[in-house]
Image 1 (cartoon, rainbow, N blue to C red):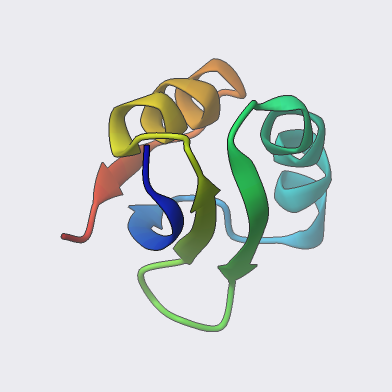
Image 2: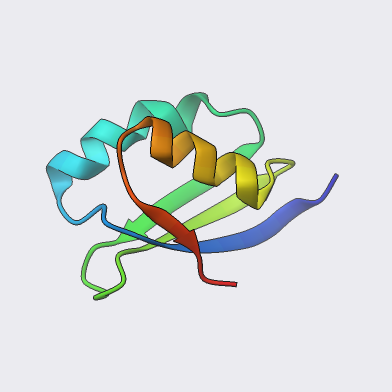
Amino acid sequence: METNKILKFRTNINCGGCIAKVTPFLNEAKGVSSWEVDTDNRNKVLTVVSDGITENEVIDVVQKAGFKIENLG
């Protein structure tokens, strides 16, 4: 289990309202140390500091919140 790994994703989380909607999903997800969305970036980059969560698990969580997400690699 990797900790403190930085995971980056392209999303359509593009405003404060979107961030408010996704916040409970990411805050309740096991294995997320911290996260942020750069809404100024045209790709709306979500950065997650993993405390064990995998890329696929982050994708599942964000999709459950109703947003599009893809791995930036």
